[in-house]
Length: 73
Image 1 (spheres, rainbow, N blue to C red):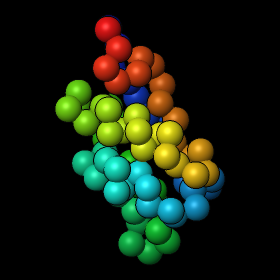
Image 2: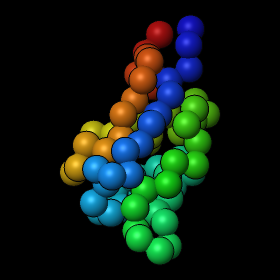
Image 3: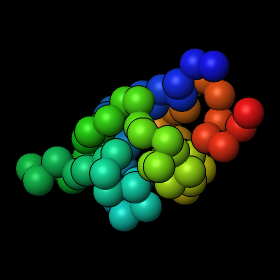
Image 4: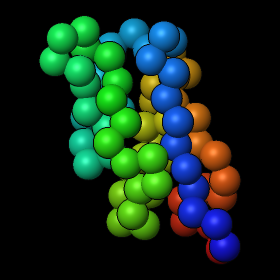
């Protein structure tokens, strides 16, 4: 089973911060421009569901989940 991997498109990001609020151990916001910073491209299983939720909540669609979805067997 492969680990889900995240990627972000900072050019697409609008700085809404939904990702950092939903999964603070996986995402942060740049203090200078407010854009997404990906802290953990391969989040631990304990943070997988929050990371997946952040993907869906991103209003700009700037976060992509590659591989199996969190919680899938």
